[in-house]
Image (cartoon, rainbow, N blue to C red; front, side, top):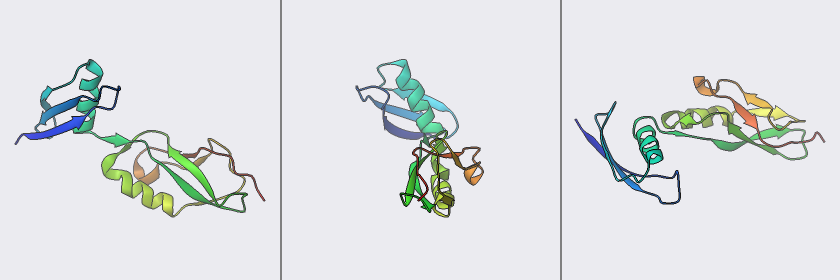
Length: 122
C-alpha cells in the first residue's frame, strides 16, 4: 500500500512543498524539492520523523523554580510523549549547571536530557 504525504521543507527559506510516496519503509517517489537538502529532509521526515525537545524541570532550593532543559539528540516523534512523561516526574536540587545531565537514556531512547541554564542555590 502506497502512502502519500505533502511535506513542507524547513531546511532553507524556500519552503518547498514536497510530495513523498512511501510503502511505509521505503521512499517510492519524491517530487517538488528544489535542492538535494530537500530530498534528505523529506526522506527523514516521511520515514523517521524526529524532533529536538525543549522543556523545563522543577528545581528544589534554587533561585528559580524551574530550569530549562533540552534533549541531546532529536527524539523519535512517536516517543516524545513518553519522554515528556519522564521529564514531568523529575525534580533536581540546586545548584544546577548549564550542560548538567538531568536524565540519562530517557524513556529508553539512548538520549539524555541536559540543563541549558544555571540555577544558583538559595
